[in-house]
Length: 277
View 1 (cartoon, one colour):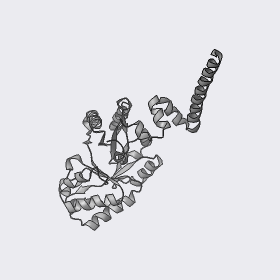
View 2 (tube, rainbow, N blue to C red; view 1 turned 90 degrees about the vertical axis):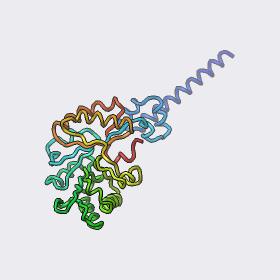
View 3 (cartoon, one colour; view 1 turned 90 degrees about the horizontal axis):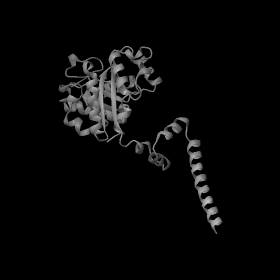
View 4 (cartoon, rainbow, N blue to C red; view 1 turned 60 degrees about the vertical axis):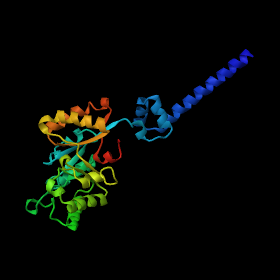
């Protein structure tokens, strides 16, 4: 009788061991090398999530997100090695007026980098340049200008602007701008100081619109990045914009290395509307 019990116990333990071995074989047989490494780093609870088929968002629901737009006003990204040195996830901001625009767009596409196009908003026609939007334009003219810039910058995820109070005061002009960007299924980020009832009412709706939480300044970039972190930790996500220059890139690179320990991830601007709270 004792021998039978021992035999049953041995068979039971062997069955458990074989089941565990099967799970290990399945996991490490069907996933790629990168996924295998990632699985090893996950906790037991997260492995359970993975095996039950939940999406990645279930693994990172407590993670905080920052979208950082690096604005290249002068086309400096064409310099050798600059694109490769940028942290993963940052979004580039480009100008339709830059002579290197098409070359830079090619570099961004080659490197699978997300980018936005600056669309200046000005008050009067006499202050406007070729691609600027100004309040004297009618709905059709605004629509045509936006579409022309979009066609020139194929591959962009949307537009951004630092804003102009006088333009944003013109409801028809602003409504036409927002509607056209929405129709093109693009995003629109705008200056934090220029919130209006029209823009605020669309945040969180099907319109992909958000104000910059912070426009970072060169002479206190470290301080600005700390503030951006705090906003992300409090709100779940934050978006900032900073100038593209050598000193700023070094500061951002060093800062980027500290984020994993804080459970903060840099994401492209378009992901602002699908990640976080």
